[in-house]
Length: 236
Image (cartoon, rainbow, N blue to C red):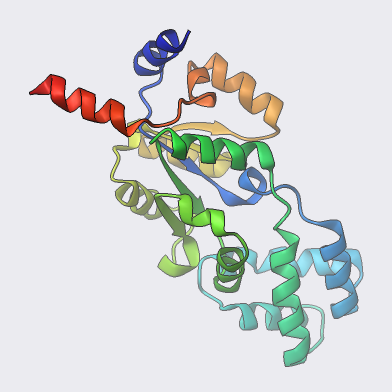
């Protein structure tokens, strides 16, 4: 059985690295309690907060705005001014909004890492959000390379950010499987040369992995250093 999986993995899935989006791939949907707290802090109704939260989000993720400036824009769009204390609370709560994990994908990433397959993250995230996630989740250090958009002042679906992620993984684009929830990000990755799957839910994702010939990657074998040593001996 294990030999069959190894052979299938080599022949049907020429993948050396898996690149993950963070939001709605490694994380689950926004936390409802955190969103309700943001409404309480701001005093805004659902429509007003939702409108301004997303109106400036891409430029925040892209690093055009730091967190403080982003929340000033959210306030101004509603004719308000937030105090420094409100903004500090909003920054912390915004991180909480995106910290419910999509455990099947997090566990799969760990399994890939244990199997010696390179993993990376390519995510559009603002400065405070990235800092908050890195502080909260030790497991993020297990990824071979992470590309956070704010640090580069470029963001998906810009071509340059896929180039950066590819260089960070030290892997050719056509040997990378990229998983993202957005169709525009997937299209840009495909144009760059990556293999891609758009993530909607885990059942759909697993079905598509098998349909595309990537099924063996879902059950990678733990990496055995002794096996590497044996291969080197055989090569000699």
